[in-house]
Image 1 (spheres, rainbow, N blue to C red):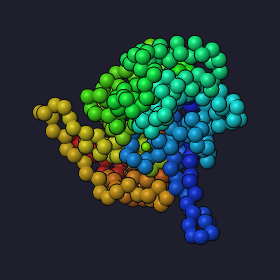
Image 2: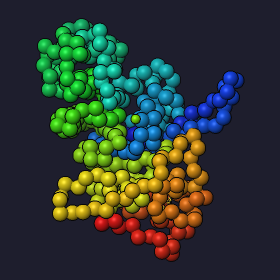
Image 3: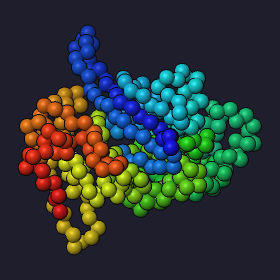
Image 4: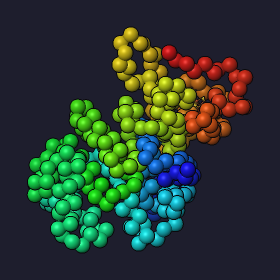
Length: 335
Ligand code: SF4
Ligand code: MG
């Protein structure tokens, strides 16, 4: 079966300018060669710390940013080759949900007007039909039709995110890219919004890319999870496998910081040295080597490529490559 979305070697390098003449002094490699597939009806989680390139990846998929290199193939068409008009039509099928819906909801417009807008853009001409759809989708996300006459400030954060989700649904999209959709919400509200997203996925056969820095949130909703570090995917696997048997030292460190619900189980926390290096000046070799407790000589010069270890479980780390086998620095189980 063909994936709904295929991403191949995606890169976004931003020039860094310096001085009065604005000469280019280098590049921030925000996204540096990312490849993955997403199947119809699946949820792919993308996790990593701030600055790892996960949000930029989301924007590149929508072509809100133009990639420096690479391909995005959606539903059999190469998005990166589409002209402006074709891309606008395609945007009906790919929608985004943002962290702070308040910032993207015009405070002077009623919810009805905000939700009608995507219908207008995509040519639903009959005002009655638009009003009917607005009411219908408000109810679908757990609000009421009469909320259409109210303004964004009259809603709570959780309600506003429901409105953001309703707006994304108005054009019957196939793929929704959600960037930190629950990060601004209280924990109790987070699970309500996540449950709503899962219900909507079942009801409408939606495919999700769920971007978050929060590993527990991602686990809850994702079928598979990709871990990003300094613009690259360092590990990707089915959720249960990634959380149960993380292979990359960075994934292991991230997971060791997540509280375990079972009080009888003590997991050793892996504390990483140093901060994330600047993406304008990434270290040579493995991008994680400056912080990795398992680094070997090879790590300082050779970039490990993402390679499959078990079916569907890939990792970019020399601990699992041929050249490093035989190195006795291989013990990874931290329990
Ligand atoms: Fe650590 Fe080396 Fe693996 Fe990078 S390649 S994560 S430095 S062991
Ligand atoms: Mg972000």
